[in-house]
Image (tube, rainbow, N blue to C red; front, side, top):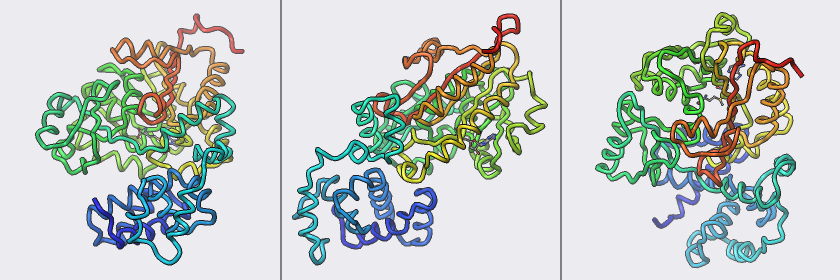
Length: 426
Ligand SMILES: C[S@@+](CC[C@H](N)C(=O)[O-])C[C@H]1O[C@@H](n2cnc3c(N)ncnc32)[C@H](O)[C@@H]1O
C-alpha cells in the first residue's frame, strides 16, 4: 500500500513520543494511539510496524545517519531497511534530505563492529561472547531483528486444532499448525484475532509457540496439585489448566495485583474451573508456606531480563541494564529456593525464563542444584519426546528464534528425590 506524507509525519510524531524509552514502547505507543483517537486502522498498523522496525535496528540506523532526528531515522529506515528507492521517497523529502538519504544509502556496513551489526548494546554482546562465537551471535541477532509471528494456542477444553483451523480458513485467515506444539497455530499475517469469535468464546489464546512448549515441560496430570509461582496474567496457567482438562487444582501466585487482575477475564473466557489466583507479598508469603510439601508440580516462570523476546519487545535491549540483571539473578535464586519447598517427594520443579543469558538460566539452576542435592536434573528433550514433541536441545530446553522460530526460552526440570536417594550437599 502506498504511503502518504501525513502517515510519515504521524510515524515521526509517534517515534518522537516513544524514543526517550522511559517506559515499555508498547505502553507508550498505546498512549499515543489513545491521544490520537482519529487514527484509522491502516495508520495505526503502519505506525506500529515502523516504530518497532526502527527500535529493532536503532543502533544501526543511528550509526549510518550520524546524529539523527526521529525524521531522519525514519527516512533511513525506509531507504536502507525497507528498500524504498529515491524515486519512491522523493514525494516525502524536504530541504536537503534527498542528499542526506543518498549518502545514507551509500554507507558501507561490512566493517561495522559486531555490536552495531547485531544491533545489541555492547554489554549484551560481551555477555553473549562468554558462551557464543561471533557467528552464532550474528545469527541470533538477525533472527531478533525480524518481527515475531502471531501464534495462538487452542484451548483444548473448548475446541480442537483441526476445528479451529477450519474456522480460520473459512474466515479467510491464513494459518498453519505450529511445527512443535500440538495445540498451536501460526497465523500468516497479524489480523485483530482478539476480536474474532474464536477468541471471544475462549477457544483460542494468543501465545508464542515457545511459551506453549513450557506447559508440556511441566506436563501436569489431571487431579494433581500445581503451583504456577510467577503466574502473571496467566499465559502459562491457562495452558496448564487446559492440559489438566479443568481438573485438579492450580494455584496461580504472583506479587502483582495488576497482572493477576489481567488473568481474570482470560480465566472467564477459558471455561476453566481449576485455577485459583493468589496474590502473595513475596516468595516467602504465608500462603506459600501453607502448601509446603503438598504440591506435585511447580512452575517458576521467573522474572527475567526478557532478552529472549526482543522480536516483540525490541526496546528492552535499550532499556535493560547489567545492574538490573544482577538484581534479577538474586530474585530468581530466592524464588526458586522458596518454590522448591512446595514439592512433594517425586514432584517436578520447572525453572523457566524468556532470557537468552546463561547467568539467568543454567547459572541459577546449577547453583540451586549444588545447594539442593535432594533435587535431580531431568532431561527436557526426553520429557518432550514422550509427548511426541520433537525438540531436542539436550537436558535443558533452550529455544531460540533463529532455530525454532519461537521467542528465546529456557527451561530446566528438576525432580525432588526420595530422602534416601539424595546425596550430601556439595
Ligand atoms: C515472566 S513473568 C510471568 C509470565 C507468566 N507466567 C505468563 O506466562 O504470562 C514473571 C512474573 O513474576 C512475578 N514476580 C516477581 N517477583 C515475584 C515473586 N517474588 N514471587 C512471585 N512472583 C513474582 C512478576 O510480577 C511477573 O508477573
